[in-house]
Image 1 (cartoon, rainbow, N blue to C red):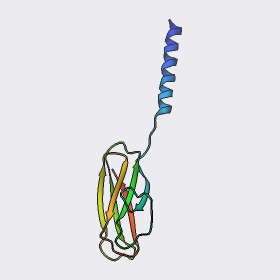
Image 2: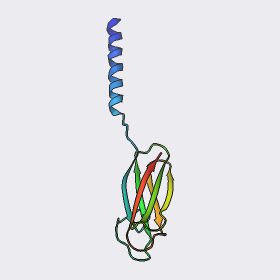
Image 3: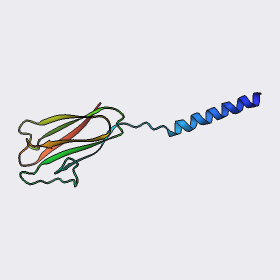
Image 4: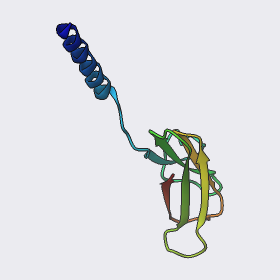
Length: 115
C-alpha cells in the first residue's frame, strides 16, 4: 500500500512540474510601431507627399485583456498643439491613428501602452 501511495505522489509531482514548465507569463507590449499610407502601415514608410494620408500604427502583442494605446503626434520643431488620442483594444491587435492635423515638415510621434 505504501508503494502505491509513493507512486501516486511521484506522478502528481511530475504532472505539476510539467504544467509549470508549459506556463507562459508574458507582458503586453508594443511589438512594432510604423507609419504608412493605410491603417496597416503596409508597406511601412517614413516619407510622405503633401496630401497623403498618414497612419501611425502600433501592433500590441501578449495582451490578455483590454488595453489602451495613447498616441501623441507633434511637430518636430515643437510648435503648435500636439495631437493626442487613445485607442482601446480588447486584447492583442493593431491600433492606428490617422494623422491629418499635422501639416508639412517633420513630425515626431509616440505610442504608449496603457492598461
